[in-house]
Figure 1 (cartoon, rainbow, N blue to C red):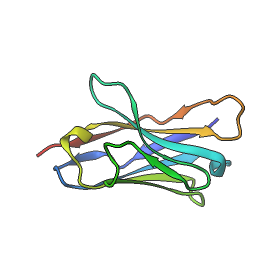
Figure 2: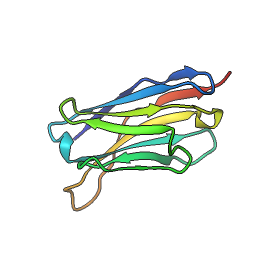
Figure 3: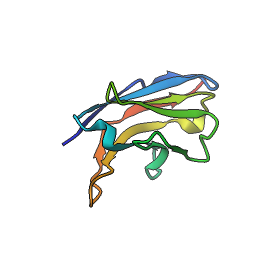
Figure 4: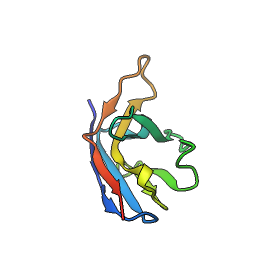
Length: 119
């Protein structure tokens, strides 16, 4: 069982920055693939960024060059640094985790944090 606790959302003007944090309450954090997803009203939930246990990263085309995902295994925390934010980035952002060792993937989700980009 893994509990994910997100923080850092809020209201920001276009062009601004926010940093989201996701603390994972687990003793095996270093084995988890960590993802950030987002869901805007009327849209499907989409993956934004991924960081693997080895530190490899992947990004959605819409955020490449603006967002950076990172992890701190000593703190059991993953971050999403969001720069040059656009109104289209407005969404509820969710932290997601799954154990890379598991034969069957089981997804853990945080409660979500609202990000609003507006003048």
